[in-house]
Image (cartoon, rainbow, N blue to C red):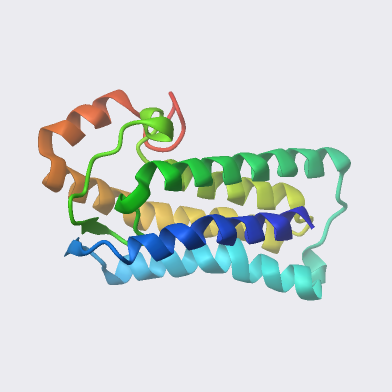
Amino acid sequence: MVWVLGIVAWCIIRYPFERRAKRVPVVSNRRTGSEAVGLAAALVGLAIVPGFYVATGIPEVADYTAHLWAIVIGTMLCCAAMWVFRRTHKQLGRNWSITLEIRQRHELICAGPYSLVRHPMYTSFLLMGLSQAFLLSNWVAGMAGLIGFAVLFFLRVDKEERMMLEVFGPQYHAYMAKTKRIIPYLY
């Protein structure tokens, strides 16, 4: 149930920002086939596979015993993921995009969660994937989120950083020097 509520919250958080972002013209689009693959992998791993499991119980052969401690940890991770996800969207404002795009009057955001990591949206995906692994007591459905996140992250983050370096140059380079990618103080 916590996983389902997390997915509902995810959609509720994203919807108004997606609507607003469509009103801001895109000046540079860096969409690629690998980005589409990464986004599809994240969707499959963080929503479709676990959703299918929650709805049907398939694959039952990969089930294991759920523990209260895992549910508690998963719930805390889910809440943290939603908090980071919301703060990230709010901080980006009109700069937000689901794909690699630069919008009109795009600004480099370095405040809020961006003061700790360069890619807090990916941090929220990682937290959601970890949450899923604790909440769903099934090896396939539980781990699918982490695999989907990893595919998206490794196919996209280097391209995203190259794009930001091209647009913001030395300002982004200096920002990279003082922040980690997705885990504060570590990576």
